[in-house]
Length: 255
Ligand code: OOG
Ligand code: MG
Image 1: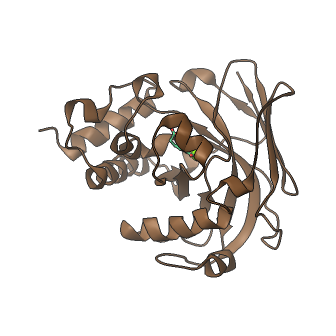
Image 2: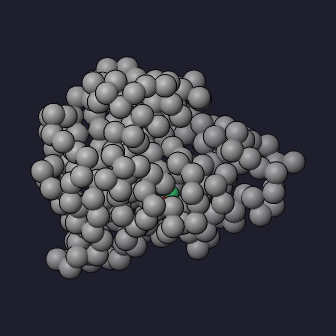
């Protein structure tokens, strides 16, 4: 039996060297959700041991569009480190990834500790700011295909973050038009309402899910609320821009 530590090394190396691996569940059909979150924690520990800093968490599969695109219909979470941050308006090197995709998201900045079962009101009261954002996801599995435990073990495909300027959480973020374009052509459109009906529900889920794994959302943490639309595959030469009504825009160029 392959140990959880060995699996953590496998997924961490796949991310580090941008080399695709077969799905874990192909060989280990009994590999379950609990094991998968344990592998995720161990693989992120390796990143922290290399000097990366924990900066928050990401939620995944919080919209129907995302669930349908990857064929997994459970909300998941992953851990974010400072090494994943890409400069807003800057460049992304395509060759550092296996098969990167980009998705429009909302980022929360946490102002007060938050964990466990909380109401939407309590969650919003813990928010210091909201920002337009994009996530770069890069499944380490061949053909971007995985079952639920595979993707969880692979840190929920976490790869890169582009975060715009934070605005006051007093902005009503419930139903904001969202447009992702590549070289000026619209590729994805949606609304922040696609995130479980309201993005704050993603934050409520984050507080509950991290607590199940003994963690807390801390002041200064970023929480990525999940892809509002299906993800767009990245090609060299593309200038990608996401605009969220009332929050602003973020951009990145693929080199
Ligand atoms: C899984 C990660 C999902 C999101 O925002 O829904 C995710 C994947 O699609 O590879 O980041
Ligand atoms: Mg995402």
